Image (cartoon, rainbow, N blue to C red; front, top):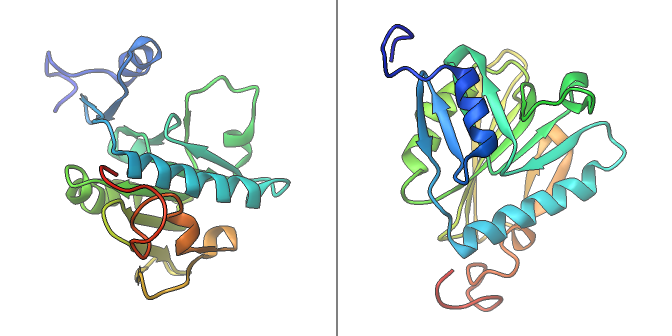
Amino acid sequence: MLATDPLYLHPDDYLAGELVSPVKHEYRQGEAFARSGGTRAHSIITGNLFGNLWIHLRGSGCRAFAENMKVRVQAANAFYYPDVAVACSDRDRDQQLQRHFIDDPRLIVEVLSPSTAAFDRGEKFADYRTLGSLEEYVLVSSDRVAVEVFQRDEVGNWTRAIYGEGDVSIGLRSVDLAIGLRDIYEDTSLFGGAEGLTGED
């Protein structure tokens, strides 16, 4: 959508609206899109990932954010709410800056749902790749044990590693952390099908 279009929503107006809206919206190129509610498994997996990252990063100079913190992607004129993000830059850690978004994520994690998986893998990842700070992008399935880890190498190329139920852990190079798949899916019915919640995860 062009900025001259009468329906174009200016980023400043979007940000102001998010402060009072009871529903979170993502923003891309002049349009705002309401975020759909997640399943119980989606919420649990997000919490597990955030908790492990928060503990690991204490005292490191990096900070983990979950769900309510937007990432600004200036090159794409977009704001997204990743499920988990880690930022390490001075401006993203500066508590004097009263902002509701970060600019320089080092790691972004999206927990997939059937309605968002294609976008998270496609246009959203393409937008995220324009962030010079981003070193790692992780996609976590919420309906089966499956994790994809995309890592940017020294020359800017992206590689993908796929993990499943037969694997023990995933390696997050951007934050120097190995996290067990059992820890990611703890308290859901997914890992091995023998633990945690049953029914409508």
